[in-house]
Amino acid sequence: MAVNDDETYLLNQQVSFIQHFLPGLDAGGYQLQVRQNILDSAGNAVAGADYSNSYTFAVTADRFAISQPGNVISSVFPSDNASGEFSNVLPHVVFSQKTFPWVRYPTNQLPYSPPEPGTDTDADVPTWLWVMLLDEDDVSACAAEGLSLNLTPATRSVADLFPQAALPSGTTSSLGNNYSYFNGATTILGLEPGETLTDAIQTIDVPLSLFWKIAPSVDDLKQMAHGRVVSLINQPTTTNTPDPGEPTGSFSVVFGNRLPATGKKTVAFLVSLEELQNFLPSTSSGGAPTGNTFNGNLSLRLAVLSNWTFFSTGQPATFVHQLLSLNGRVIDDPNKQPPPAAVNTNLRLLYQGNNAVVRGALDMGYVPLNETLRTAGQTVSWYRGPLTPYQVTQSWLQVPIASPDAATIFDPTTGLLDTSYAAAWTIGRMVALQDTSFSTSYYTWKRDLEMQIQQSVEDQMLEQSLGASLNLAPQSRQMKLVAGAPAPHGSGSLLKRTIMSLNPEI
Image (tube, rainbow, N blue to C red):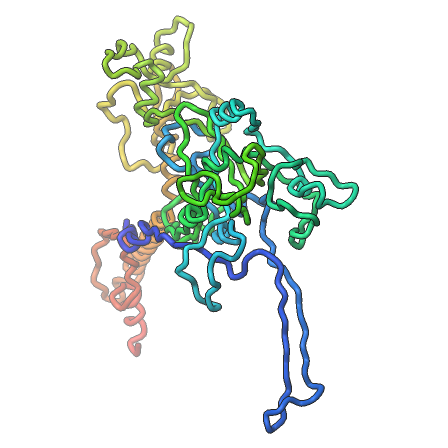
């Protein structure tokens, strides 16, 4: 069967790194002014024929919360509640909405000169998003300084981002003397169309003394986001990615700037740094921004757009390592001898009975499972996974296997069926058919095979019915099935020769 992997090899391997995906218009309010002058034949403006109008519109985008995370965030790494060797990786967020990291900016002014319509810019554009990592050591360090840090985001409203003096009568804020995006505001100016003071958000208060140690500078933020165009052919996709029928998909990635601590439960926060340039460190070395007058004992309230937790073991997270750990075979001190090997390292069900056959089956990794037969009958069958605690030296199956029933084995010692290979065959078929390249080639092969069989039967019927009267020489009926070879319906086919014999004028 032909497979078109060779034709799409480069596409299968394609990963293009893009500096940024800038939106056509940044989020915010805009005013469009239109003016028309009417000139006479001499090119002079006609009096009273000067028309103008203005239009106000807004480009909306998530700001302090993501309204539909599934349409914006494709995945995070490490995944939520994951455990592994993450102490040498920078956690990051993958966005299916590729322009999201650049719809806003951390600077007080637009950080680049807008290019001409339809063109891009080579300027480094900082992202307004930051993957902030915190753990219990940060909580302890803040407590030692008499400061408070809570790793659980608080559910608040947009009003809690404003100083109390900026809010209308009857509206309260929990910000107190701390800092936020609207630091020093005296009115609620700054909200965008569609935003209200009662909108629910999640926030975290980070002491400025800690924030200045871990926060990126504006120059850092220019390097902490980029775009990727990746091939989707033969790749698993999720509901948050573009249509799998498309050859490529475009994503953006935002990284953190802090490595997770070993042996600690780390909490990752995707936070907004929109227009917080005055609070960010002046250099990549960290520290308080130059010339600032902020009180380092107060906190900066940040909007949390997403958060998740993971645990860095600081040890290899390979499959072999995990199996050895289950049996106490891993030691921290390489100078010590490992304990004796376990008698049976197989994952298995415990058995308290006296049946030696059942005990042997369970020790080999088998489990008894309820099965519904094709005849609607109910039975119990053996099943095990692909891993065995012994070497399999003899195959009980003959390939090719036409159906899962052909891979079912009868166990005469227990009178039960072994469905392990049948399940593996079914899983393999499902995985293969999910591969667009394989399934398309498989369909083409089956179609051509069916056409060849039909042609062979057709030729046999014509020879038997009309061969003698038309003096047709008998043809060999030994059909050779060739992958990708269509049925010969051209001038050389027996059907064509028969028609020509019946109609000499053709």
